[in-house]
Image (tube, rainbow, N blue to C red; front, side, top):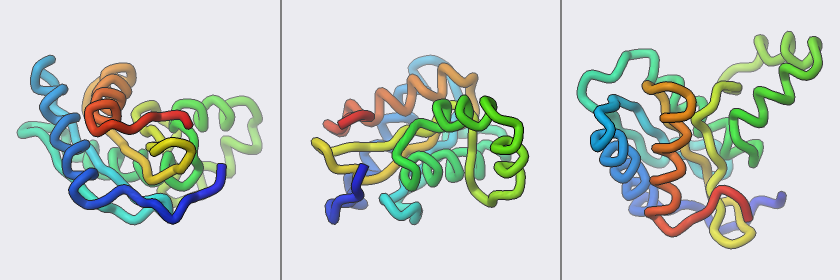
Length: 142
């Protein structure tokens, strides 16, 4: 997928961060959430009170991975698990995350960034990220 010149704006990124945290709160979850532009630069970050400390870096790395690779971190993890040499190589790469909770963000067919959520279970992280993307009017797939 080509990267567009359209990037997630600061306001849009903050909207997604807030929506993910609000969605998590309705389920009693504490999360960290990050939004990156297509090049992987952090645009917005937030966290729930009481989220575990490692979730902060995990969320940022999930957003980076999804934004730069244009795929979910879960799909990326499945690909890495499919071949031993890929999994070994992943361990040597800074910032790439293969746990569920990172989603690319699209506006039409343009990849405009990525969102990463961490702190809850895998499916809950994904659910919070999906809710945030939808609330902002974007999609996970073109």
